Length: 264
Image: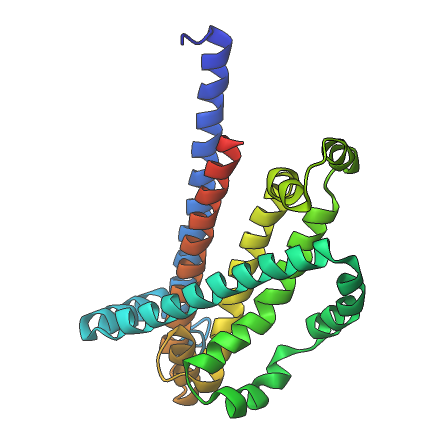
């Protein structure tokens, strides 16, 4: 299909806008790193406390050469994957139960509110005692953080389904399962996608918190280990790796979102 001159002009301006935005973003990052390195080299800031980009690069290179970096990254990714799948699956299932059984929703609502407002770190010692000082505790910690968010978001998406469309389907004697499958869930796609984004963020937070408590490997362990030996190069390297990892995970979810929206 041939495009008009106006369409081509619009797409050109859109591409140029994206390039300009990307250029500004990269310039800000490079500028920040340059200022950080300069201040560290000139002792304007204490390099022992604040580290520097060159020291962080050397630390990450050392972790790569020793093979430790891949061990920590893959461990954290594995934990994130398990907690994310469990969180979104259980959240989706419980949200369906709440939607289909309003009485159950009324009973469980105050408990969800209490669990959501409870600081999960306070449960850390109990989780360790119950699940043990292992990966189970880390997964449970992540689930406590991401599950409630998934339930509430998906459930609210179900509740916002057009009531007139539901009545229309009922007039055609559609069953509850048919209404749920063919109307409620498809109408809640945006909320489900939003729940995926929040879930992956909450999962990452939960996994790192869990690794702070019990792990002997993973990015969270790397950060807490660097703190214990007072090696800020390791701490900052762990944080940088975590930022990159979280960005890549979010981009994967964003790609999935675009694919789903395109198919609508």
